[in-house]
Image (cartoon, rainbow, N blue to C red; front, side, top):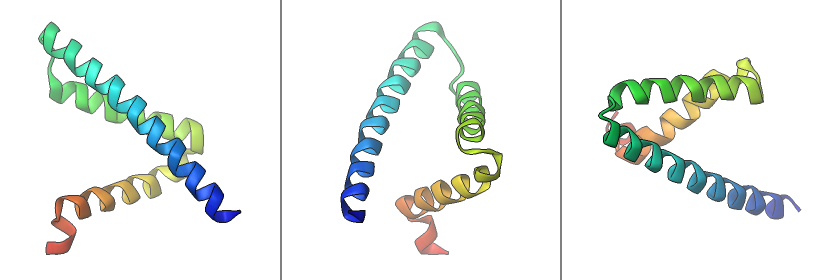
Length: 83
């Protein structure tokens, strides 16, 4: 049962990652067409994502979520392997 739930959760995450990717692609296309500033957009998006995390999972989970994602991204780029 645990393996089944893990697989279902991975499937759900894949679907939602695609949804977010599509939304971001459209937002960046609109931003570029309107002459927006990607750096400010990025900062605003990050703030909104952190606020959503706090609303959905509670503010005490922010540090853990950021750490987990940060380590995964650093490992993906090879930075962790060089430390």
